[in-house]
Length: 193
Image (cartoon, rainbow, N blue to C red; front, side, top):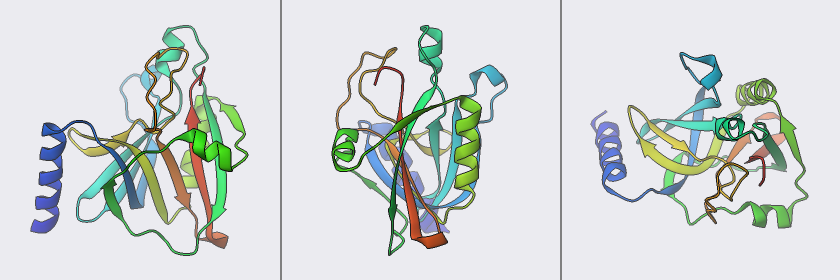
């Protein structure tokens, strides 16, 4: 048990003292749930908790709508593109810094169709599919608070409400299913992207 605590403590200290890191995390899912908030009007995420040895649990925080777009008068719905594939070997659990991910490269290789989702429908889809997976792969920005987690799991290009244009740091989510070795990569975009 000391190894897990040591690795986790060292990682949390590195997060606190270093610039933000873009990472790829692969883990064994053990909980997928709606974000817990006191005010239901502030709920805009699904939480996916993964076991990632030797770091312990890591929470992936996935947007299901944009409160910023809603406040600015833009469409708050997420647009979701799904890229399907098959896998032959389950990726082993890991947490590692990544050189970057760009939706434009994925879109150049696959015909990605983005569909707008209402908040409740996207929550239902992610929770239903997430309960069937045996492995989850996530790209995003690492953070440490009262838990270890990843956020910014969406396109980081400028949007209707956010003018900041971040390149090569798009976050994504990939589910690995046991049935027929199917995998689905979820690409999330906001209004204006």
